Amino acid sequence: MILNHIWGLYAHPIEEWKTIDQRHESLRFSLSHILLVALIPCLAAYYASAHIGWSIGARESIFMTSQSAVLMAVFMYVGLIAGVLALSYLIHWMAKTFGAAPTFTQSIELAAYTATPVLMSGVAALYPELWFVAMVFLAGVAYSVYLLYSGVPILMHIPEERGFIYASSVVTAGLILMVVLMAGTVIAWTNGFIPTFVG
Image (cartoon, rainbow, N blue to C red; front, side, top):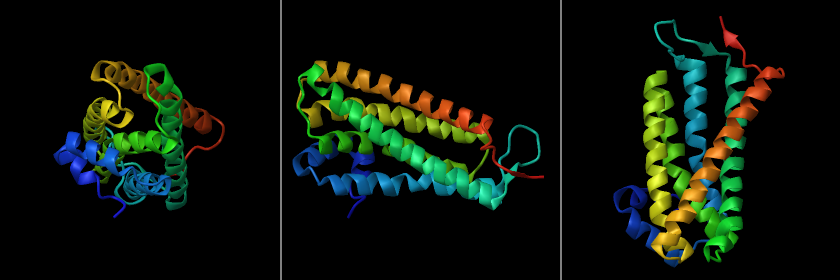
């Protein structure tokens, strides 16, 4: 089953990283995992935007038109996939600096399984209160960072001390990618891709 590592990453992450390292599924398997998990925040955001409405403070709920919500969900999906693939590339590119020699498939595995809690936190959009979504997202980011720090030494076959510095570099790269995605969204919105709201 494509999503068979998700439970293990939450229940017993160290053992699950070891299982992932022993099995090393194919590139197609890792890509399928991220393609499926990335659907969660996109579908939740679409449904919340078009059918539930976002609540920001004491104002009335804000709704998007269905067409606009679909378009935003598609752009979000493409952005998330591109972000994970870019992170995979950076993991692979930085590896030699830290004495690791992973295959690109191993780099995608690390990026895909590390990103899973952040992506799954997108289900919080089904309760579209900004404070709630932000809290769940921060919890997802925190757990993803933990998974990264625990997974790097195992998947990259390097000592924990070097793994800590490597993981810190990946976290920094991930934060930069997040800023780039946000900046891209702002640029798109200011150049005519503004969503249409029901009003």
